[in-house]
Amino acid sequence: MDYKEYIALVNAKIGILDVIGHYVKLHRQGRNYVGLCPFHHEKTPSFTVSPDKGMFYCFGCKASGDMLTFVRRVHNVSLPEAVEVVAKEFNVELPPWHLSTAASRERQELLLTIKTAAAAFAAALADPAASECQQYVGNRNIPSDAVETFGLGYCPRDIRSIVTFCSERGVTEDNLIRAGIIQRHTGGLHTPFSHRLMFPIWDAIGNVIAFGGRAIDATMPKYINSPETPLFAKRRTLYALPLAEPSIRKTTIAIVVEGYMDAISLHASGFGNTVASLGTAFTDEQATLLRRSASRVLLNFDSDEAGQRAARQALSIADRTGLDVAIVRLSGAKDPDELVHEPDGKNQYQKALDDATRIGDFLIDTVSAGKDLSSLAGRRTFVQEMMESVDSLQDSLLRTQLLTKVAQRVGLRETEVAALYRKGVARSDVVAPADPWKIPRKNLRHPGLPASGSLESIRSLIELELMAALVQNLDKAGELVACMEDSLVRDETCREILAVLRRDAAGGVPSISSLVAQLGSEAAALVSQWSLEPSKGDCRDAGETIVHKLDYRGAEETIERLRSLSSQEEQQGTMPHAEGVKHD
Image (cartoon, rainbow, N blue to C red; front, top):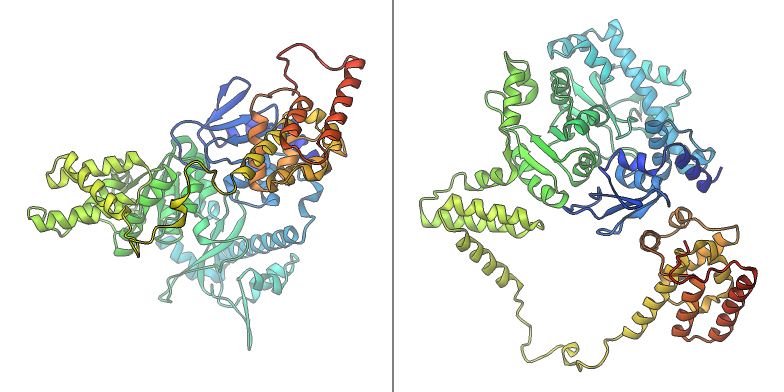
């Protein structure tokens, strides 16, 4: 079963609408479906899905492809991982080529190693020898069902029992070393997780990919994470995401906390839409993961300086992703884990969520702190600092809202603050020339002369027109491609499309999904776009017109072949003559 056959099998079982509709709210528009693009921030839907062609295309960011391409992009995973996602979430069998590459086999071996180690740590926590760790779990009020749900474990001081457990299940010492679980030093095997409570870390589809270890005594550092591997990168991972995603999708709200214990305690208290950022930084990659299911993110970081600094960084993330980000402030407790274990703590935490401060208001509060806004100097400093943040924003609505709030805080009219902002922008745009008497040569060009390369650009547009006609008439494209010489096309993207078309047409009628799977991102985006546009007519007629325009050495011979093909079909009664008939 090759890639094309596997896509056909998945389409027959579930269809592209079922898969993409799992992540994007789609509305019917004629034969296609549209929705807000999950790959860039937009307010008006430009993301289009064609169930007939099994393709998606965004007219805003040019993202395009088939079902597996979408899964790869939305989860930020490789093709084998995308196949796993589809197999897990939609109960579709894995194809035989799933493990056909060395990289895929290596990945599966690493996953098996970490999964086996997680089972070994869980078994060790249940052993009487782990009494100290069991007592720590009890003191932290972690319920037994949470221990099981989150797969908590214990790494003993003597790592040999873990190595033996794994060895009996086919996982070698070398595997464990590559996974960062053990280290080989002079005198034997060691582990950085010695005598720690172990937290398995999952990827977005539920595979254990790493561990966090919490010291249960005074050992420092308090927390240790697995090293980064081909499976695990901290900035692209959110702790407990697979457990939280159903609740996030239902509520469209995600709570982001700092640590493992915060996430576990909140889940145990009924806040199932909680994830942890594995540190104080909330990254663009983590925001993108949440944007699949959430429209609002509530950041609840510790009240220390690092936590507040991370919260301030969230403004730029909100701007780039379009998420509605707010900051949760706790009073009377340093973190959620501490608060929810106090009397009436659950209700107090819910109130803190309800009172979350919008990221813009939080930034204004942070910048104005310690400044005397009753003085001219204090107001000037405040406005200047806020202008730096406002100027970096891409979202004009968010920028306008911030300017309004700044004006309210310092008691100025909105027009005055906006004028200050525009003046600052204008000043920054003016760049003084090194030599005011030396005028750049490009500025001396005669306005009537075409810019350099414009003739080639026109030719490229004509060649793109030809490729579009081929893509929109794939059932006849093979005949036209056979008539064309490679020298007809000069544009690199068009040559790439033509080469794949020629190769696919040799084995039958090409498919859009097969073309896209073999093309680079730019060419794939064009093919996807053309496939979703109305056909402009028969590709032979278009081909003849375009070949005339290109005027290359073999033009007359190519046109003669095209006319010959058309004549043959007319004699056989296969060419429609009705005006305006489209050929798909």
